[in-house]
Length: 202
Image (cartoon, rainbow, N blue to C red; front, side, top):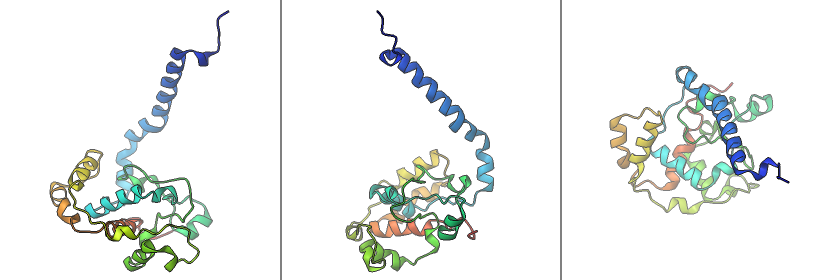
């Protein structure tokens, strides 16, 4: 007797996967192509500087995005605590997007309007110096590791291919804009950029 359990058929599994993937593409990806111009027109988002791009990569490589979200939901409690709620047009230059889903630490969407560079430096070196109850790990090595900027130009070129409007001059000057900066300086520059292009909090 033939086994009629479709999970035993590789062919059916492949067809089912293609159907589900195609449906997801039609629902989530394709519509974006038709209203991208509208999002750009209503967005205040600004491309990151070369140093901020490097800082964002450090933010990702150190796993910061696994504990902090960057998506304030349109709920009164969240808006009161974190500032204006997130909109799709805020993130048109974000590749990959860092919305996140876990808040071991606070949301960082509007962080750039809250603290000084010095505060961030102290916090990264030892979070307990500014927030005694913090469970965030310290990152003292970021103050010792220096960037050479060798890959920065390529990163900006890749982002331009994805639609970020970097000009030729910005790309050519990217390495020099980054070279000699510590990883801590780059990360702080990125953190200070968060929310700065979103206008007044609502």
